[in-house]
Length: 55
Image (cartoon, rainbow, N blue to C red; front, side, top):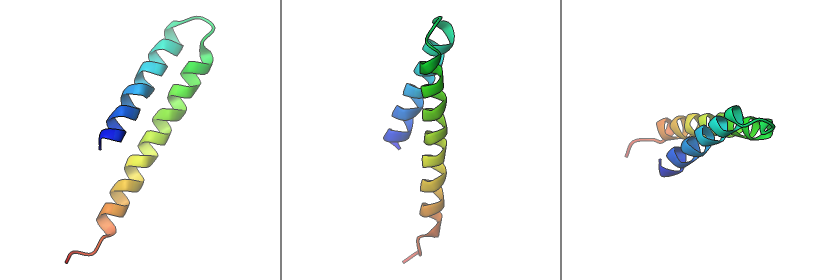
C-alpha cells in the first residue's frame, strides 16, 4: 500500500507542476499517465486479493 501512496503523491505533484508551469506540458502528461497506472495497480491488487481462497 505504500507504493500506491508514493505513486499517488508523485502523480499529483507532477500534475500540479505541469499545469502551473508554462512549457511543462510533458510533466502534466507524465502525471496523468502515472495516475492512471496507479489506479490500475490498485484495481489489479484488489481483484487478486479477493480471489485468494480462504484457508
